[in-house]
Image (cartoon, rainbow, N blue to C red; front, side):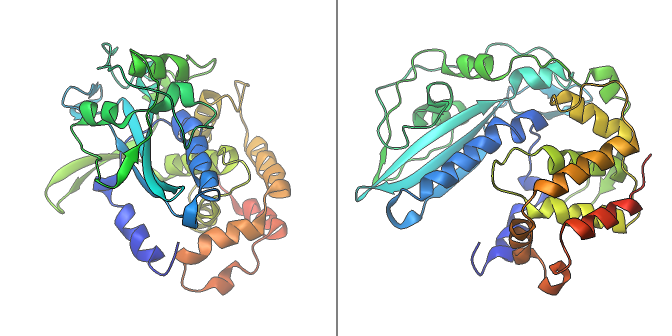
Amino acid sequence: MGPNAKLQSHQTFFYTNSVPQVEKLNSGLWSKLESYVISEVNDLDNRRIAVFTGPMLREDDPQYLMDADFRIPLYFFKIVVFPYNGALYSTGFVMSQKQKIAELGLISPVREAYEKAAISPAAPFSDYKHREVFQVNLDLIEDYTGLTFSWDSVQRVPIAQGEHKLRRIAENQERPSKARMEKAEFGRLQVNEYDLTRPFSFYVKCFDKPSLFAGKMHALLFRKWQNRVKGRDWYDLEWYIRKGIPLDLHHFKLRAKDTGHWDKDAMTAEDVLGLLKEKFKTVNFESVKEDVLPFIKDDTALNIWGEQYFNGLIEKMKFQ
């Protein structure tokens, strides 16, 4: 994180620097790709890389059905620039949420996306598990978005991606889930609308706090980061409980069913507490604290963090 961690965090978490990404992608293959990129750093010269990540925005992105003024991107890219054998290389990855956002009733059915053929076999960064589907040539990303990722001293890793690459990404990645949040149920979730005036006047629709707590609970319990943990999830858990904000049980159940982590029609407060207690037994709390440290002023507040503390804390949880 380095000495500028707090500044970098503030620069990252601006509303204008956010984009809608479905949970199943964010905590699934996208999260695994991020873990893979981090793991590759250990094998590279100087163990340093530059990563560019963003949505592949186009003017014809589908409209959000609940508010036609908003459009939702279908694809996301990640470009990695890395040193290898004394030279600099770049490679790209693309993942899709096209079918999933249509399943959730957020957009109308989507026409076939723009596609492009490409070039030849790969070299560095060639052992990514899903390379044949998701690793792409940078010109595909540039042609789709209108952005440019060219540097005189950086060689591009060529990928044999063939024709209809973006269609293959969507079809291979986003098969319909057995349990999904239907549009009718999604519409029952509590959303508030706010009129904001900075940096200009605009309306924004947000989940209420119990719904946000449900989303955070889902991330804490089911985030697929292998051996890594996101300590900020645990900081947020403590914050919601200390503020007396109840967990929206219905919202949490829908999220858990949508991602295949819950297969029953009903869910009780005792079920959630049981899931949390099992999580407490397996998590590495030292790793949790290490992730939170760059973001807090007084690290002594973390001294009591552990299984015993969190078991006591969740006894104060409220539900609705």
